[in-house]
Image (cartoon, rainbow, N blue to C red):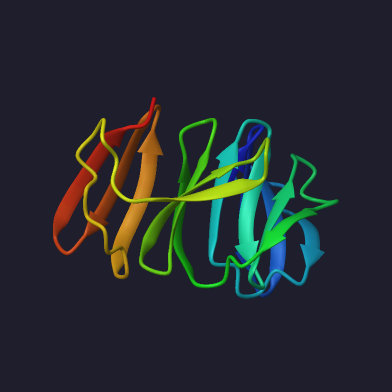
Length: 145
């Protein structure tokens, strides 16, 4: 689930739904979204991992664009407003939507995220420029900017 432009987007029954923040007026945005693994927002787009691919869509929820394959098994995803961060294959990845390039991060020097095995994360989120990961009963934090 993710929010964008006064709407909440969620997948249920293999369909992508858009609901106003009032909770009323649910609209179906399309089918084929079963098995969606993660969602995060960067700017005016939501990025979702489904079917091993990274998809991008705007506030309409329609006209999704394939941003690349190799995303299967993504455990969690978050954004600092510029980059997407994904936990996949036991690694923390940073994806730049502008260049469409991913980089495996071996630890983050300007914060406290140092664990190199992210195979069993419990959760990941961001608040502003801070990235938080919960794994193994520990809360990891790093300032990403």
